[in-house]
Image (tube, rainbow, N blue to C red; front, side):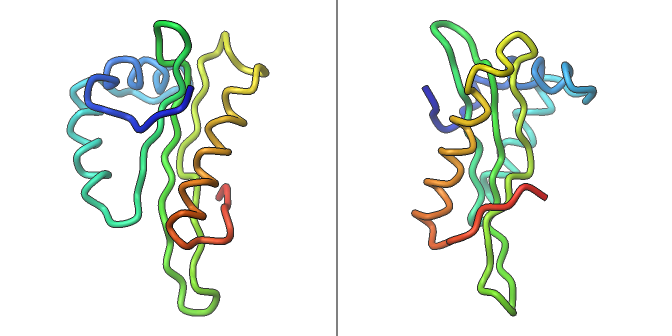
Length: 110
């Protein structure tokens, strides 16, 4: 299941980020979550299994003078034991739905 990220997810999100080499803590995620969510046209999602967060994604709307803009997936992390099971695809699909709902017809992975 995919849902918007909340502050309660901070420790799990930080642990996932450490799996891919980022040095971050739950406190860092709490602070940054607020900063990201204060940005216009920005969203954070988590994927969770029965009892744990198994992935997360950040999507941001980018306004562009020449093409009207697009949505960019700025982060996509899936738990190392859950890769290849559709978690990343589900997160991307949710980012795409968010993008379309916010008027962006193109989703990019920079």
